[in-house]
Length: 119
Length: 157
Image (tube, rainbow over all chains, first blue to last red; front, side, top):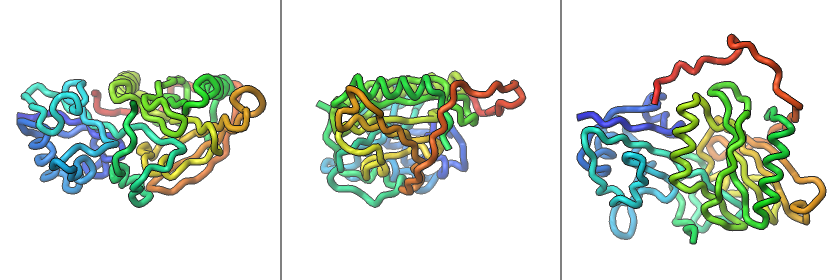
C-alpha cells in the first residue's frame, strides 16, 4: 500500500526535490523507517531520542489526515491505505534565546532542546 | 532585495503594534516563483509571548494547504521583536525553515508601538547564514502579463 507523504521545502534535499513521495507503514513510526530506507538521513530530521524513547522533534509537525500526531498517539498513530501524511516544520522564533541551542544551521532546525511550550 | 507594497508594509506594522508587547507573526503569500508578496495573512502567535512566536500547528497546516490550493508560497515570513532590534535572534536563525522566504523583522521597542517610525528590515536566512537585504517599498507592483508569471507546473496536492 502506498501512502502519500508531503515533504516540506527544507527536506526536499532528501527526496531529490520531490514535493511528495509515496511510502508505507501501519504506523507513523513504520512510515518514517520506510522513508529512511528510500531517503537516507530524513529520519534524523524528524525524530529524536526523548526520555521515553523516540519522539517527534519539537519543531517538526507531522499530520495524519489533517490531525497533528501529537494529539493522536504521536509516532504510534496508526495509518491506513487512505491516510495522507503531511510534514511541516514549525514556523517559530523570537527574541528569546532558547536554551540548549544546536549549531546555528537550519539543517538543525529540530536539534533544539525543548522550548517553553505555549501555556 | 525585498519589493513590497506600502499597503502591506503598513498592515504588518499595524499588526505588530496591535499585538505589542507580545510578538506578532504572519506571512505574505505570493504566486509560486513570483517573489511577489501579495496576500497578507496575519497569524495568531500561539505562544502569546513577548519573546517567542509560533504558529499554531493547526493554523499552519491550513495555511500551507490554502497556499498549495492557490499555487502560492510564503514569500515573506514576518514577526516582531518588542524589546530588541529588528535583527534575527539565534532562535530565529536556528528555526528558519523556508530558505526561499524573505524573513521580515519589525521592532516595536522604545515606544514605537505607539508612535514614530518602526524598524522594518528584511533578511535571507539560509543554512544558518543571515544576509540583510534592501527593502523597496512600492505603491503597487508593476503590471504583469500572464506570460510573465512563471507557471509552477507543480504536482497537485
